[in-house]
Every structure is written in structure tokens, then in C-alpha cells.
Image (spheres, rainbow over the protein chains, first blue to last red):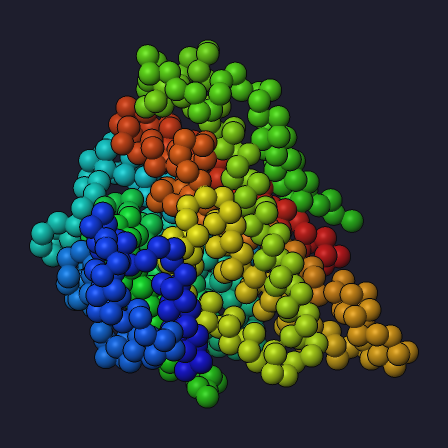
Length: 300
Length: 265
């Protein structure tokens, strides 16, 4: 994990230094004079050697100091913290909804291999994985927001019940893209487990089929799918950037897109770093959960 | 022998789309970027099959010309990381050692980044445009191929036929090219099918965010974005480009499954 965090810090640092144009140009605009540029560069520490700049960047990041926005002069860490609840709610909602969608469908498919229900469920990933995130969002807006008028088409609301209502469609759009992946892995591992000896034993003991499916098969299949979820976490987190844009949700992803439009470098840098580290941590947590659920797995 | 229908259906759908994209000027009657401000947001008619957008541009023409752009970038943006990833996978898997360790740490790091966040940051650096999208997708995409090929090389290099090739004194480059590569590449090829879908999805998403191909060039992502405000009047403008992506994804998915079946035989 340490080499990965080191790699992340280097990539983020490099990205910001590769951005064409000087920060002083953005900050001063037309009022740029060589003297002012020099003052700004000194203030931002850009006149120091590159490795010292890197050291300062890492040192600050370790202290949760991600710099200050060029425009609002608010610390980037504060900005991210303010936008975080929306993103976390969105991700949690997406995760819960995809489990609600994926579990029954994969049980249905695995209950009879090759049957008509299995065929239909197997077709879901084939179509589902090719859908653009933006498009799914817009289709949901069209159907539930404009046609049936059940949910708001954009925004985040002012209080918790309103938040919940507002993030339902965005979360659903995440779930529609995540559940095909889950369905595929759950179905495969359920079918695999059904062929194993302990299921035969359970059947021979006369345990009810529904109990076998839920207690014996599903439990083990879910354990295998936790890893699949972990692998897809990075992609999932990245897709919130797009979902937040489609539904105009004030989350950390839209913070980044807005910052890009205004060339507010510290925010772009801070959000990128934050997202990457969050993914590393979530991966660590899924590994721990996997180990807790499956006694055969040992964390090195 | 069972006929491999999935493969042929997939290839059939995809080649139809590619043909339409190649012969776009022959199929369409209008210039995809030509504006007609007297005839905006028109409903479908015999002249404008899918109506016109807010600038009076023919939606059907934009759709077909968009296919040109999205399919080309999608395929090119996969070819590059395919070559880089497969080569690096061969080298790291075969030689191991310090080079392998370094490359694997880089792979772990790139995987840790949320794809869209990294892609957006990279496009931000290189500036919006086709070249930037291809660079961004390539810088992220090679990782998967490197991992797949490396894992297969690790298995293959312990096989008897490779030991035999070594004993006959063949040079390493020849063993890698003639003995290892043909045996490890199939999984990478199958993955590249779903990877093309992923890269088209990325192009569409970046286009939607305004970081893709600059306007007014016809591109599915920017069509979706430009159509969103008129969702109530003209639901089909943002709907149909997305539907095209689904069809492309569907056909590539069929081709991928078909290839797996064919390789298993």
C-alpha cells in the first residue's frame, strides 16, 4: 500500500506541474507584471527547486492541507469536506440499490441453469455494460422526472428527506451500471458453489431448497463478490463525477469539473489526490471484510 | 460442431455500423455541422429523418458522422494501450526482477485512480481534443493488458514446450514472439473487445462534460449534452446517440463471447 500511495503522490504532483500555463497568469489575468508574477510565485513556492516543492506537497497532504482555492481563498480540504456528504450518499445509495437489484436476479438465474429466466438474466450484462453513464441518467430523468414526475430532475434539496429523494435517481443510474457486474459474478459463483459437495450433503440431509440457496449458496457467493466490488470501486467512484454533472448534484466530482473550467489548480489537485486515496482505503476495507467473512483468507 | 452464431451476429452488427460510418457522406443528405437557424428543433420529416437540433443541424447526419468519430477514436484508443500493455506484460512476465517490480507498482498505482478522475485530469493537461482523449485513455488502459499478459506468461514459461525451445538454444526474442505470444494473447484480445466499449463510453462521457471533441464537430457525447435541455420537446436527440453506444457495446460483447467460445474449442 505504501508504494501505491507514493506513486499516487507522484502522479498527482506531476499532473499539476504538467498543466500548461502559469498559476500567476490565472491569478493576475491582464494585470500581470513581472514583479507581481515574482511575488505570487514566491508566495505559492513555485520558485523553489522541484524536489522541495514535492516534499512540501507530501508534507502538507499528510497534514490534510491541500492548499487554498485560487478564487474563493477557501482551503481545498474544507471545500472537499463540504461536498463530501452528497458524494458519499450517492455512492452508498448506488451500492444499496445495486445489491437490491442484483441479489434477487442472480438467485433467479442460478436457480435453474440454462432455463429461460437464466437466459434473460444473462443478457442483462451484455446490454447493461454498454450503456453510457450520462445516457442512463438522462433516460431516468426523462422517465421518472419529466414523464411521471415522481422525482426531482436535478439538485440536492435542503434537508435529509429531500436529499434522499434527490439522490434516488442518481443512485439508481449508478446501480444500473454496477448491478450487471454484480449479477455476472454472483451468478457464476452461485452456479459453481451449487456443484460442490457440501451442497449435495445439505440436500441429502433434507434441508429445504430455499434454506440451502440462502444460507449455503448465497453466503459463499456474496463473499466472492465482495472482491469483484472492490476491483470496481475505482471505476464506480470516478463515475460519480459524471452522475453529479448530469443531475447537478453539488458533490466533490462537480467541484472538480467546476474547478477545471476556472483553471483552479489546487482544487483539481486536491480532489484527484483525495479520490485516489479514498479508493486505496476502500480497497483495504474490502480486503478486510473479505478476510472477516472468509476464514481461509489471510491478510499478509 | 455448434455454429458460433454469437460471433457472426456481433460481427454483422458492428460491420454494418462501421460501413455506415465509412460511407457517411453517401448516406446522409446534410452537412453535420451546417446550421439552419430558420429550421431549428424540427420534428422528424422525410427530409430530416430525425429532425433538427437547436441550431437547425440535421440530427441523423450528426448521428452517422458521430459514429465515424466515436468508433475511430474508440478503436485507436484501444490499439495503442494494447500494444504497450502486451509488450510490457511479455517482458515483465518473462524476465521478472527489478524492472518487473517497478512496472507492477506503477500498474497498482494507475489502478488505484478512479478512471474518470484521472482521464479528466489528463485531458485537462493536454487540452480538449481527439489527441488528448487518445493519450488519456492509453495512459490508463495499458495496465489491464500488462496484467493479463504477465499472468499468462508466468504460467506459460513453465510449460514443457517453452523449456524445449530454450534447450534448443533459440534466442529469447524468438521464444517470446513465436512460442509465448500466440499462447498468451487470446485473453488480451477478448478483453480488448470490452475495452473498446469502455473507451467509447469514456469518449461519450468526456464529450458530455465538454472535455471531448470540440464543438461543433458531431460526436455522440456532445449530442447528448446539447440535447439535454430540450428533453421535453425532443426526447430523441439525447436518446438515440446513447442507444447507438448500447448497440456498439452489444455487438462487441457478442464478439467477445463468440471469441471465447471459439478459443475454447
